[in-house]
Image (cartoon, rainbow, N blue to C red; front, side):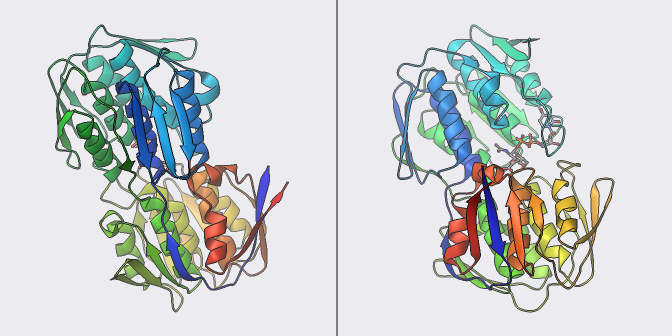
Length: 418
Ligand code: EPU
């Protein structure tokens, strides 16, 4: 197992290119289950989660290859509808195969995801939606079992906005008989990406990106060739914070400004200099940032996946900041580790009250989940002295070569085996 070591205090400067989005590619891989033949995607990030989803697709009978950012998924010989516990327990997004397996095989057996470091994450809305599409559902021996000779379109009113819930129901309803209308649908750009790809495969989806999505069921979908995965908006935001924290000057290339509006807004409020330039977003940090309040919300609100990174920035800001989590109210595992580096953070219910200190100091810390790991790497870049982050496999699940990219910007960062 690797650990990351960072010698803090170096200003980041230069250009960085954003990789393909983890949370876009995973549902697209699940969408391949609905096709019969060879699908290819480009700009695919080399991530542990992509490898896990590849393993799962192979178990289902697909041939999957990945080389230089190109992913090949051949679903001609798909023959199995069981997603085993051993894989699902390592990646919750595996549950995205539930809808497409039910649509393609009329049945599925998918391990029920268990607890998670960022809080309770039920999938009741996924199951409610599939039930409304006519699937019979049982929970047996820790597995969800679904049966439906053919799914039927229906109105699916979600109780809350759920990203993978919306995706799972879209993935099921595209091959259903008749029309489906999803109400209170998630509006995240990754949902739009999935709808675009499904439409290219032959589906008839309208309204993705709004909270009402309509789907006209079709009889079959066709493989897609050479689709380029959208850039990762959370990686983009993470580099923006890295520049702000180190008083740096970074040009972030290959990203989409329109997808990071809420993060840009908050950084501007904190006093960070951000401009849209030819080729990307330029982020310049200068003086100590001002403390600001942040509340996480569904898109286009401030993303929960950027909450931990902003907490690091607020740890050394001037003043008092209140960070409120409305998506995953217990997603604060990083707070205790940041405290080990000198941050002053108090947790009050689903809020963190952060009193900015003049500086953080390097310490051995432990990563607990993907975005918490990113917040600790960021803290290490800004801290005085050496920071040692263990359990970095969490980071490798969702950031492509983060340490190498930071090194190329001037950070003193390297890996050692534990
Ligand atoms: N929820 C329910 N019931 C459900 C589904 C969700 O109560 O059936 C609740 C959740 O517990 C949470 C809220 O609804 O309180 C929103 O959860 P959502 O379903 O939207 O989250 P998700 O689909 O499981 C995706 C991302 C997460 C990201 C969240 C929120 C993927 C693969 N994962 O998860 O990404 O934090 O949306 O934006 O798209 C990450 O990348 O680090 C990550 C955790």
